[in-house]
Image (cartoon, rainbow, N blue to C red; front, side, top):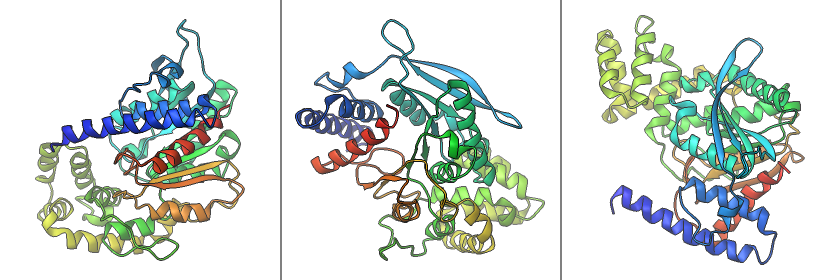
Length: 386
């Protein structure tokens, strides 16, 4: 089956599965609660509910560009506002959706689709552009930015927003929620495919064995994308000083899918720099890339730990919801298994590792039990807005 055909078949399977589940759920639990969750999930896969029931719960959404004022600068953002059919504002709460390490940041189509779907449930949704993550860098400053964004939205709306962090933004979100201003500005924190310990994630990218709290290894082999993100983030270690900046830009272009531009930039590097670029991008030289990642994990131990929720969550009181795709090839699901142990019991509301998700996208058509678990998870964090 071709990829597009598989995508259509997957959407059809989701529609049938979730529509059937809705009929069951409305007979045993409040229809509104689960209808919102089902509406969100169906919107994410760009599918219509043949029963028409969830459509009745969706609001029209108006999008606009905005800025969020932080202490030292402003961040570009986009706001998705739910309205009634008469055009009146219909927000029942506020939330941020935080993009992961991706050059398109808030312009990435899947992020936009999710933010739009979340707003359609009645939650005014903000997507701030986290500058360093957009540049493929994971830094402590982004933790501060997340907390400052939450405070800015709280000051603007006079209500605490919830936040949903995708991939590495999820781990940073938990750290932001455990300190000021995030601790007193966030209503809840949801992580999707988050990291617990970046040192372990680097070892995973290097194809070393990594284990969950019970000693079980990762289910999925690492996707090369993650390794290249880390090489880009630590270009100063990978390239010689004279090549580091240009080498970094070449790798950023490669990660953005601009391969012709990346090769042109790489051609301006020294002979050694060109060879290092080849190590990062040539599958045949993966062993050399793995060796670098292990060296980086060792040399940047303290720096990686500072941006990992493996420490720093002791004071977390913001309600936390953790979800992870069982076969995630970017951040292994065992990271959320560790997070579930790290988040204080009083803050942890739900933790779910599911085959329905891959990384930050839906994966395979779910069984009835898997449907129910995911819908209940989504309904639980949506309830925090009421």
